[in-house]
Length: 229
Image (tube, rainbow, N blue to C red; front, side):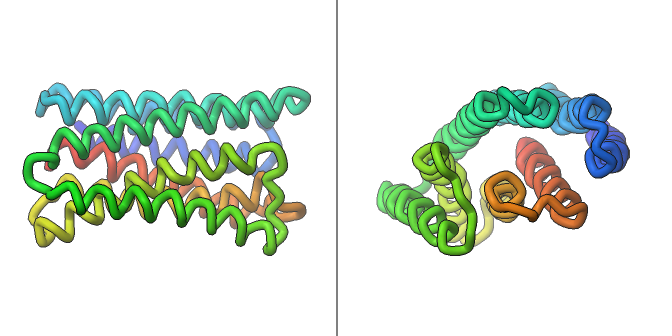
């Protein structure tokens, strides 16, 4: 069932990107919601198959991912309120990453020493600030969203680094952490491209739009599939 949902979602992704590139933002939002519902329904189905606190937390994170997609989709339709929708998108995705982090914590806290959690936390904050600062030199202007971008980036990098830390500590035996790690890396790549699309002039090209969304949906499905590991 989960594979059927994934295939259905990827088919919807094609129609979403086609409408997005053509500039039909209402139709693109419609297909985007269908596409994003695919990873949420996958998470809910896998939660039913393997119920646990980890599964519930992951499903909550996927739900906020869907909400974030809706808010960011509305940005292109109501351009006068785009700052509000971007802010709402940041907020929902940050909450989603928080749930992913809590799921990792609940799943691995008994097996991983505290040191292996503190180092990723420090690295996440420092790296997020460094990336946003360096991006300014490359023409990416976050403007009023600079501090928000640092905070959001810290959540995203913390999730990814924590999954990597658990994977290293367990020598790759923790398959849930490994799937979240791969999903987190896809998320990081996707958001770096998204930053250029949103905050750098003349970078809203079809190739970037396609690459950004392919990486994003790969991220969410990897995270969803971690439930059954």
